[in-house]
Length: 98
Image (cartoon, rainbow, N blue to C red; front, side):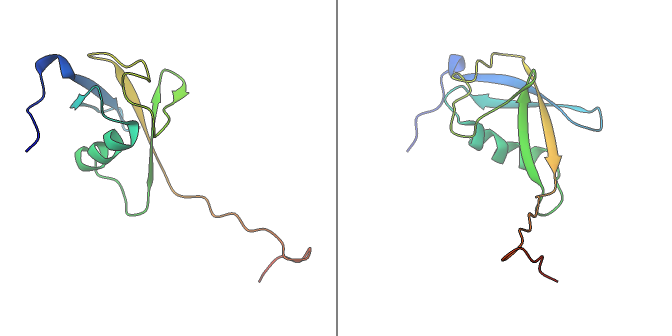
């Protein structure tokens, strides 16, 4: 069974949404950005298939980095970006598919 987190291991972040809403989220410092994105998806409703990305100041957070590695601290605000996936079509032998 996992040990309970020590109080110093957790922090509260503020999720800034495109709507202007701000949602608090308590996370562990050792969590990766990818784990936080999963928590964000539970806290903020997103349309099916939408991609969730997180920005700290103007820097896009890397999925494999921990929150500590990303430089995040108690009370910091991160911007939540919700976007549809891009579909790129490349020509086959110079001809675009129909």
